[in-house]
Length: 142
Image 1 (cartoon, helix red, strand yellow):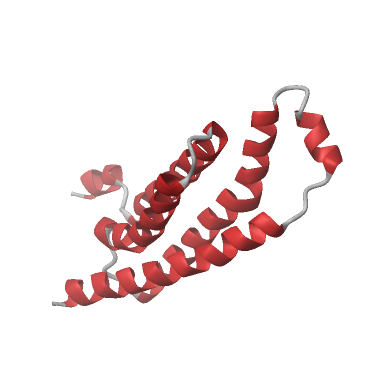
Image 2 (cartoon, one colour):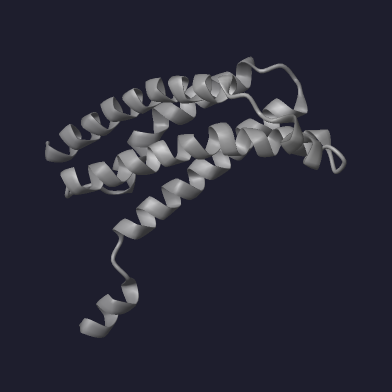
């Protein structure tokens, strides 16, 4: 019963994170980027320039918001496990997946969304891995 309550709280916090991601994406889309910054990357590839800008303006703040919420819940819910963090991340991934389905068939939108998914997966791995005790220490102490 305790696990069910913590999973339900993770889902509620995940929905709040998904709503916060709308604000993060909105502010990220409203940020004006200097033409000098884009002109540095344009000779290499215009596609790369927009992907790099999207990574730093939208994907990184989304990942940081997830990590901040995950670390905050790590101290509140002592029994948090990988399912807990999965329920925390699921609404955000579903919302971003919905945006991916609604996106036109432009390659830069698809790659930027996949880059966000990759960054969120890395953050999920980091938070789950930091929560588990080291196995080498357990085998030495026994």
